[in-house]
Image (tube, rainbow, N blue to C red; front, side, top):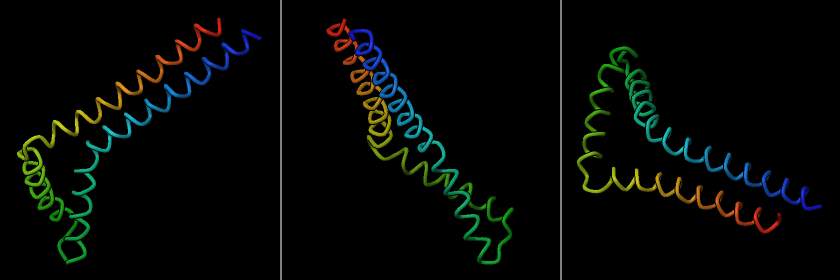
Length: 107
């Protein structure tokens, strides 16, 4: 029975590890892909106004770069975004480590 309990604890530990890994990957990939999505949306908007998609993308990239510069120059915003991601990492590590204590008590 102890082996079954230990196996269940390890299974739940793995599920929590995979869940937090997925959440952290989604968080940081969102930070990377959001400006690219804005470029696509602005180029489609300019395309609907009659400007070609290629020229719309050529116009959209500097617009998004300027918006990125505004975000970067906002005091504390970028560091707060990175700290939130790192808090997710540390919280996930704490939750996975909590299963080790449970596994030790089951043994």
